Length: 332
Image 1 (spheres, rainbow, N blue to C red):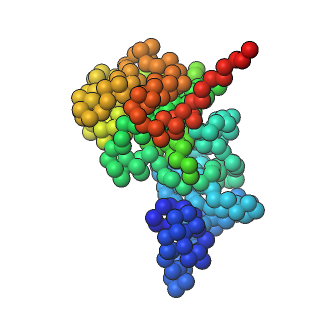
Image 2: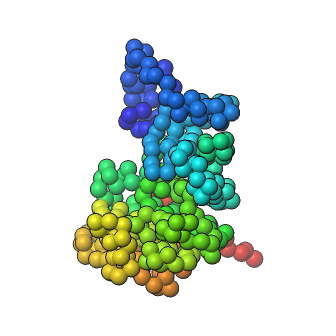
Image 3: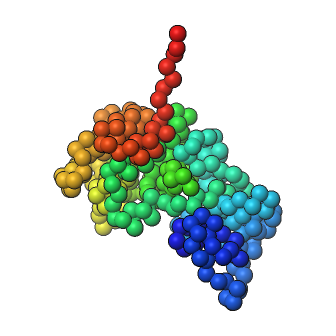
């Protein structure tokens, strides 16, 4: 559906979710078959009906598909063939599947399937119909403080869960935060996730991650812990609030250098409508010294929930509190 993004069968007259009238596809000429789709059908063993290519990034192509038996929509992420022939990249892609498979949390995207056949390496994830946080920032430039806090609280609880199991994501950014049908925020793409003391660089010596969202210690190639992800989430909150990240530059080096050496302008200084309490939370995430940040993702989530409780943001408060339930109290 071009209106709400939900999947519908080709013959559907109206969208099953929003009810909008669907375009008539009956007289459209069929496009020639995509060779990559044909190949993907073969390497997945016929378990999925490959519908179409959704997009393509520097590392992989993404396809929309249906499980043949369950008829449930999924996304298949396929490593580019030239990368699949490189041992390091195959292992990195495999690690994404292994890392995410260990994590069973409502705010972390699960891996349904994984396979390696010749030069084809793929993993399968649930289709999340509500798009990415990047889509929402692009459509509105910035989001409300209350929505920003609620989304970040959910992401923070998911990260806390991963961190307690020894995994650091290392690439928290709007593209890697998706939304399900119930508007829950879901962290995806654990492709460069690593244990606390594993190698922090590629074999060629390049630091892995996205420059705009890198912590200072990540930019310097240092060993990381979960507080590095909280820095990245702080950058995401900053961008979601004001419409742009705290640091920019002509190239990845100049951006990384600013993360290491410069102090961001506080969000409430950029835009006086942003509450000082939320701005302070973001700036704590952006501290250069990891010891000055929130210690754990749940600590950050609690601070965000406290902000929402004082902001009369009832819907967002419920959304965030769902991610961080009230601890059980012993009776008797």
